[in-house]
Amino acid sequence: MSSVLAQPNEASASVVSFIEKELEATDLLIKICIVLIILFIVLFISFFITLMVARTTHRHRDHYEKSLKEKYELLLTGIIFNDEDDLETEEFLESKKRVISHFKKHYLHLRKNRAYLREHILLLHKNFAGTAADVLRKLYIELKLDKEAIRELNSPDWGIQANAVKELAQLGITAAAKKIKRRTQHENHTLRIEAQVASIILETKDRFSFLGKDKNVLTEWHQLNLSQVIDKLDAEDIPQFKQWFSSTNDSVVQFCIKMTLQFDQFESTNDLINLLKHPSQLVVGEAAKVLGEFGATDADVALLNVYRDAENWVKIRILNALGKCGTHEIIPFLQQQLLQNDIDIAFEAGKALRLFGNEGIDTLKANLSSPLYGVSNICQHLLDERI
Amino acid sequence: MKVLIIEDEDLVRKALEFRLKKDGYDITTCRDGREGIVAIHAEKFDLVLTDLMLPYNNGLEVVAKLKEVQKTTPIIVLSNIGLENVVLDAFNLGADDYMTKPFSPKELSVRVKRLLNK
Image 1 (tube, rainbow over the protein chains, first blue to last red):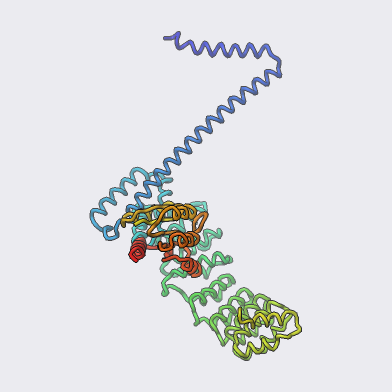
Image 2 (image 1 turned 90 degrees about the vertical axis):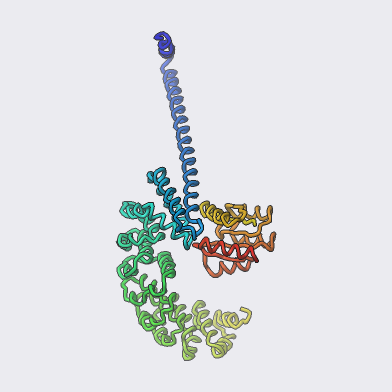
């Protein structure tokens, strides 16, 4: 037995001694080359082994995720698409309980698996409404996935926090509202937007309080996100946006002006007229636009007063508004602007004149042969009935 | 009754398949617009259900192609986009119904049934 075991050792010893002998007998350079070759061979073999192990692990993980995905699909579709009438039957509740405890025991002990299930629930919840959405929400809470998302709000990584906020808002977890509200003034832009959107959805009172505190600029994208979620609120939850017209944050004022238009808050007309004196052109331009859309005839004098010192883009908005809300008395003013050297302003003035019916059309006709650059072309274009 | 579902999101496609199979329909599924158009050319369906935002060929292209190949087959467009012009585009191309996500699966069942009974 011992001689059998000794055989491989003897063989390897003889190989080593052979290599030693050969090395002793050769030049230094050749020795170095041999050592390098051996080193590369060893490196190549270890690299190959690492690659194979990584591939196998990857394949194994893919296979596991695939099977997990199939199981989750079965669980979710099976639970949410049962006949809605069967949802409360004892038989269904019992089988649901069994399935859930099976999942809890075999799959949900791993954080990775829970994260995967949360992703699935969220995706389905985004796509399906009604009873299906309610069932998904109940399942989410039953599996205590909401607790996990709430815990993630304490993560030092703002990306994880933002995702958790989004998820909690999507699934309507009101228990998280207070914690989320604290993030509505966060220095990170993405987390701040998500938290403000979530606050609007989850808070029952003071859901817009962040507007009074926000010192950061609300970008167009940010405003779009907020307006989309406000649009889904019940009418009684929509506030009077004029209460934030006095904010020191110009972008908040701009956003609130837009909201007065979106929700037809005509009672804010006088406050909008006052905003024409605002030092920010951003605010003046937005207020002028909304006054025009409201057809606020009381605003024409105020609009004319701010016209002279306004920036060009604001002048264009004012002319547009005057076309919609101005009285016939401003036709001479519009004609004067039509004859300006600025093509954009002349065109907007022409468009406004066109809105005044026959009197405006006559003014345009009278300027058809104007020698001023572009004016006759503008009038011709505006009088063309094919357009 | 044969129903074709074209939806790129795996889980949503499977969920729709599960629901409509439960209603007793024979379901074929495709994961993108190109696959959907190939299926429309290959087989006659009683109803098509398509998502709007699809890889390769979008839902509107699927609607146009379906109305070219199988004029009488009704098609329901499912989409996250509720913009007026997109909805109108879909109807102008021949869509028979348009549902904005999130939608109730029960409502979808009713709409499918209604179109198949017409």
